[in-house]
Length: 129
Image (cartoon, rainbow, N blue to C red; front, side, top):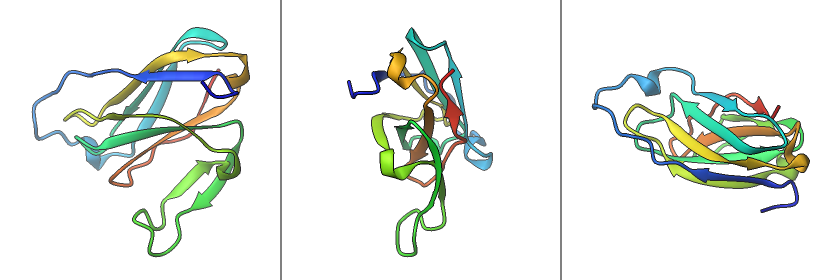
């Protein structure tokens, strides 16, 4: 666990029928649970189905746009990339849902989370309550 005491584990989500339109909408990250808490659920809906989704934490919001020639050229991250921490990855199901479950210690309270997948789909920034 890093110094911000945020530990989330990926959660296997049931697979749904193919043909989902999940990748056609803007991905949305929602959080359930309080802080500090022994239970925090982070769920990203609308990711590219079957993609690997990466959850990132930063104590501050920020703005960074991937430069030309980067695989995610033009995609804007809403976290402070100077203090960016990788939390974990999981695979989005066929409906485009990726889920992490874990706990958030006092150092994570008020921090921010965002999800990016290997197809460059990116969620909103969500603040840990």
